[in-house]
Length: 177
Ligand SMILES: [Zn+2]
Image (cartoon, rainbow, N blue to C red):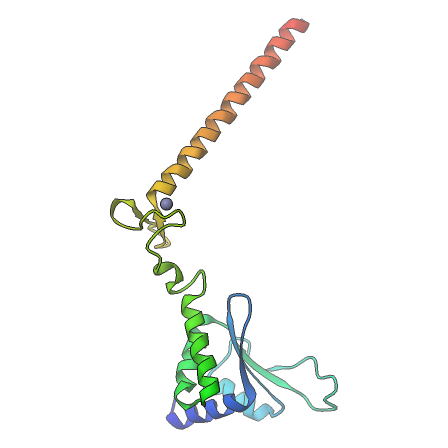
């Protein structure tokens, strides 16, 4: 993207755009009545759903509102990094906060990567560290073993109960016979 386009996008965003946080996501949107302007935004930085006409236009007379929106984490980060140098103080603070949120929110980025211990406090280190070969996620071996031990114990308990149950049924049947 050319610098002039970046600056244009930043200026437009400053006036017509907003950054909001939803459930564990950051949303960037620009809402406008000028379809050609918002279409230019979507050409410079294409959104996954394209420019949409805003449904709720009550009280706006005949004016149509158009919305351009991005929500995908990495894409939002990319957009913010493009416009960041041209933003004013207030917007820049919000944008930086959004970047921070995107890299530390639970479930993504560095939130889990930065953790050095499992939820029970065992270290993700040395022999205790298990790395899932398919997901790359880290697990604690002490907790994995504990989980497996409980699972096996529970399985044995259920099998024993089932065995006792069938023996009782058998005895009852014999009594009846
Ligand atoms: Zn653990």
